[in-house]
Length: 214
Image 1 (spheres, rainbow, N blue to C red):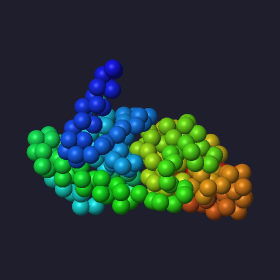
Image 2: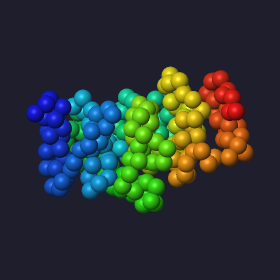
Image 3: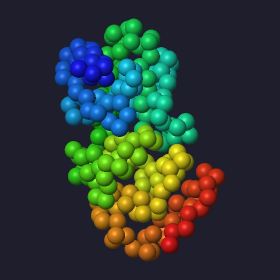
């Protein structure tokens, strides 16, 4: 058994005891996703747990010494997926730990979409996309289809550029097609022009150079 496997086994055992129910893990490009009843509610990386949180739960976690997952850029925290470190203060209070885990699961389940595009699939399963695209999106904190849809094709593309990646415009067309559940080759020139306007407006707001569409 590897050290990483041992570490994952430890956190799974703890969570199963807290919830008195089964919890599973799945390897991600970075760390492991932690799942309850098929819903990902946390990330486990380097022996630390990060709970997914929104709205009031974020404030409560911050008040108890939590901090954002390091792979999420600060300027992306309001719009991107949000995962927060489980602090020592929470770990040392089992009742509090259980409460925060249950709240995270509840939020994750409430936010899980049931459409055919997001149900039971990963990013690499979307039209036009491969494991390469799934891994590059993971580097900017976009880990699931629902998070990809929340971010949107244009903003996801810009986040990748901001991270230092050199991308062709074809990547954007593939993202757009993926979220529309169609082949990117079917995107019309008029659609590309409209998307290009929005893309360059966002790039300008970020202080980045405009991209030629055609």
